[in-house]
Image 1: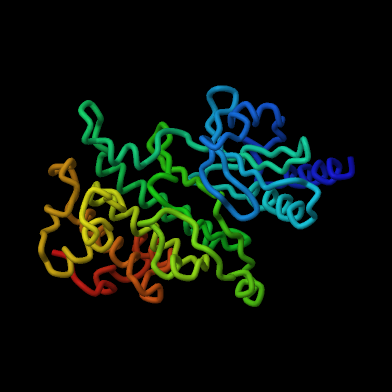
Image 2: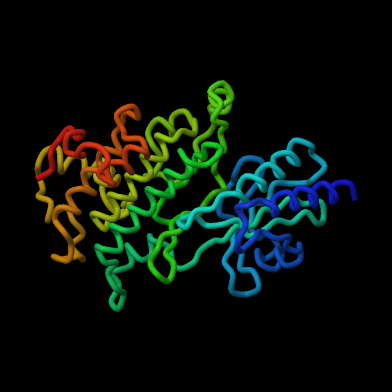
Length: 336
């Protein structure tokens, strides 16, 4: 009973926040979550995360969700993490972020529920266009998706009260709504870091890297340390996917050609291919050359091996908005 009162008080504090105008997170029954996730079946498991596991679910038969299962409420450390996560994620509000749907503390469980998608995954729309009958994702949509995604990541890294390192930015964690606006999801791996310098450094502990191969920055794979620079690398990989229409990893190709980042870096660095040859062939001529070149350069700069040589997400947004100098002065190799 004491635990229920604790969580109820937390939820009242959370829902009274000025950030909640529409779609306020709510308490969801345990039975509804069990039904949505097929009783937390292995087939619905999507990731192992800190202190728990994330599951895909279908709530009420038509609402796609992700359920993060932290464990039992008898552990004080997990209770603190659970309540903190609810309060933090419940306040994240950006038009290009998936939102917290609710929570559950029944049966001694600690469950956090998120929206899973508003529409199909970007990866599906981007890479399934070779199937007859599937429409090609238009260049204008791709360009706007990257621009909106940059704003969402900037919100997480620079604008919110704490610094949020997503750790799982991929074309599979981005969904498009009916108006083709992106919604970044996949927060099961996210780290919330204090902006206080000392606390920030203490929080950046080394651990095992979690994420999708091909999107993870080299230094993150080696150290497991969550940083904004690693997020920028993942963001850059998504840009290259949008430009080329190719996935981050192509397991059908030879090892040296499997990673998209290395492949494009070599083609551009050695001037083996022109821009028209690098661009997604399914777009044909349906794109602006200057925009295509701009995104290609941006993707390459964001995926530099040395994290110190990458742009910050603030620099990305500033360049996009024309606040600072041209990206051409920042690139090591000019793309022609």
